[in-house]
Image 1 (cartoon, rainbow, N blue to C red):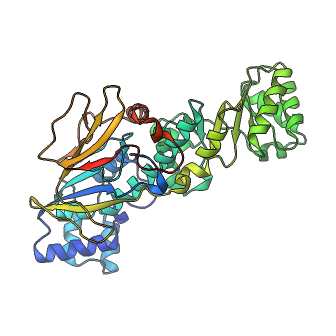
Image 2 (image 1 turned 30 degrees about the vertical axis):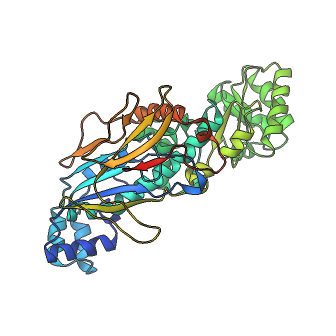
Image 3 (image 1 turned 120 degrees about the vertical axis):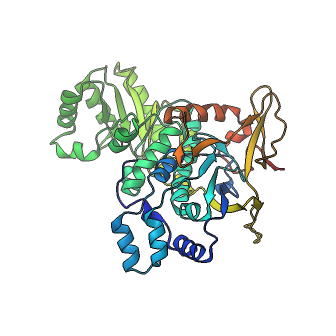
Length: 429
């Protein structure tokens, strides 16, 4: 993993090191434990969630180290004692991880990630794992709803200016995983191989003495297949000018403000009248899944989405938790009201009709799986063994394919954007 920004190790939370120090002192740090990541519920009446960030989690765990500078910081601020400091200096995760692969759908109670190791080496990973999975899965879950609403029309992710600079890269990855066609984030393109696209902003039009001068400059550099932003001044005039400058082979126009549905309709008529029948129409400007769905009947060819996708479209976190469920082979569970957990290491089977439609998520003790029907599927896969990533892990493109198949497997009501119950029920045995 390429490190940018703060050290991975100091993403550990203070209270995790407090627990570590106490466990080292009383001799319980080496007890074999199982921690489980799951979501008690889906956000805001959502009907499904999308797992994203697993690949980033595995890279982060494999690279989890405390450098001399970080150890000095912990010592000088008296966060840990000398024994804990010495233990952290040699930290290497040596346990096993199983979980839902990226691009998999999940539901309340799904055992999304299972971490097995000593209490000491597993407890310090809580904040690291949750910060990645909660962010990336929230973005992917929102992006999947937008992709479904777009009904095959491409969406470009344009949210880099609406979130933290490091989160923007992860958000672009999660959105691409969930079906977005491209991103404007060049670092995401470099790091993850995501196709990048971008158009000019209004500043470029305003820079020039006239709209026509701006268009001529852009076409001269990028060719007539470029996308011209036509709503800086008057859209009707802008379209006329764009076609006059680029010719009827103009690639696309972009509309970034106003009632984009009505404007797209008028723009299509105008373009056709000007002979630019193949010129595409892209719309942007505070779009979310509901706005995209409302534009289905309009002559829109592509969407640009920024703020809503990088903020999870109202659900900026997936609400996942990291809970201890087994100690030395003994199931343990939290009993707190409204925050209860289920003890024991678990796995899950997804049952399907012969047609491929998902029927039920069956969460069961890992050592006693239920009988598999002809169309049933075990969901978790091995992710790490003895601290090393497992072989044959799915790629980002594999995750995109997995999600496309998963979306097709949902019952039709599971694709509704209105609030409702999870698309398939979760049964615990």
